[in-house]
Image (tube, rainbow over all chains, first blue to last red; front, side):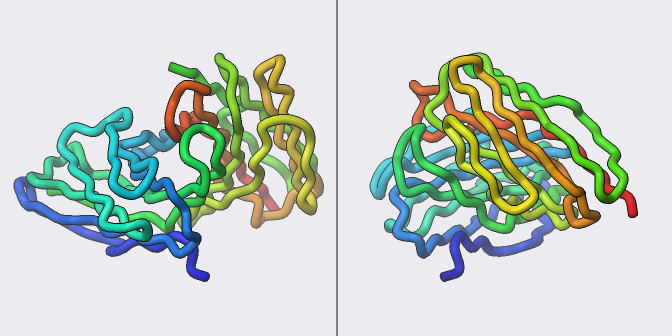
Length: 114
Length: 110
């Protein structure tokens, strides 16, 4: 039981390049989330998926797109990376949709955009 | 939206000391979580505690939902307790959006 896994662990991009961050969970959770963490701050929600087939914007969605590929997988895409997207990205999942579910986090992807 | 405030922002402890971290939130919540982010950046779930008191080893947490605060107690601190402690809560009308506090940076010295 691996919990929440993320790939890659580290990535360096040049401005304007695109990439997709992958996330998978094996806990049979319905809801999945993408957060970013900037230095000295807590996490901020980018997008979430309350259940398979649905996605919604969070607090900071600009510059990102997401795909809920199936119940296990939720990917985050940067179409044209900008230096402001340099951050650590965390994926999370929870069994209950909405405000009631305990969220479990993956190990993070450290992204640098030059 | 909901505001989550943590205090103190920084804490330096000698190994073996006890401490209390506080989390205040501005609105009613259905759940509250405490996390430990270790020096390697990993977020570890400590407590899922919408109300009441829970204990896990040397750590315990109490949430008083009616008064909108939660406390995390660290007893007999160890150097492995170093890191940043976050509390996070979603407002009742928000789907899954955990609002994080700014964290408390804890350093435990030998």
